[in-house]
Amino acid sequence: LKKNCLRTSAIMGNCLEPKSSPSTSDNLTATEQKAHHGIQTGLIDAAQNERKAKKLLLLGAGSSGKSTLFKQLKCIHGWGFENPDFVESKHNIRVNMVACMIKLLTQSEGLYKQQIIEECVDLDDEKTMTAIKCVASFKEEQFELEEEVDWNAMEKLGGSLDLLWQLTAIQQTFSKGRRLFAIPENMDYFFKKARQIFAEDFFPSNQDVLRTRIRTTGAAIEANYEINGVFFRIFDAGGQRNERRKWIHQFENVTALMFVAALNHYNCVLFEDEQKNAMLESLALFDEIINTKWFKSTEIILFLNKKDLFAELIREGVSLSVCFHAKHGWHEKEWQWLDNENPNDYATYSVNQPMVDHDEAAQNQQHSVFEKCYKAALEFITDVYLSRNRNKNKRVFVHVTDATDRDQIEKVFWDVQEIVVRSNLKRNGFV
Image (cartoon, rainbow, N blue to C red):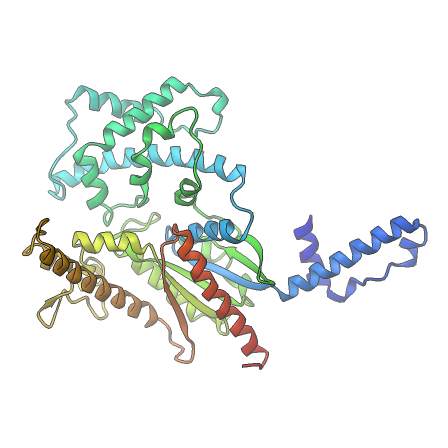
């Protein structure tokens, strides 16, 4: 009701006056008149706050981590997670785990035949087959009606998922198949505690809620915060292709647009189209958004997210050339694995210089090379995104983030506030 009042008052503007109409207040007692006046004044204050609020739009391609960022802001500047958030996450975690394991099992055989992974799932092993049948029996389960759950069966499911996750073939399918089929990156976090998650007393932690993948669909989700006396309205809009046309025209007058791109997506494919590289899709969306007429005078803040997963890929030696190469449909400047005879791909160095645990000098050298390769890869991706901006007078602010890191997001959002406030001063001629 309060939100509706805010919107109505913002639209009606001067139609809301602090004075009571004779027909309303003349028949009220003194106490009722005081209450009535208080309500009217409250509505006008709310309307003024609505007009002064800084509107921020959170955008990004699917699975970029923007909803995680949105939830993190809720923890930092809002009221934190509420019981419905934990209940929804519990259901989704369990559904995602079953679906993910079935997909890993399905994809594993094909990857083995293509010699992408070295081991296959042994279907002749009785324990393995029993576990597969157990997981498959829950394929259509939504895990919503806990009062009807057979907890003995749930415990067996947790044990089955744990057993299958321990298989080398499944681990290799998860780590090496990400650029061939879509799967949530953080499922290893949940599989490591499968038995706990399917126990009767399981209750998600804040970190579990943050890491749960729940697709944003339909209308944008809205949150309102007051931070240091400044009112913010933040909208989280659906990132998948078929969601964009529903919202893009609605946000012409936003103060700032926060675009979230996942750094590790150079090695991933889209959930809605496994033939499309996820980072190339993100770049196409960023190009469309940053140059559209709707955001011509809007501040643009680019979050290069999932830096932790990006660092893992660089350390594993997954080259940017799996995305930024002509054979993968990239027709601009290609990633160079060698720069002035120095490797930009960590694998190029590490293959010839294996880590020596007891040699501190060798470890320091290897760490130095990793840092160089990480920095070179990050700079390349940053430059590619910034090159989408065709308005040379428009500055794009860049932050490298891990949306699951509360302290980091809190610090970054301080910078966002400063950008927004400075933009407002500029628009009003004070800067």
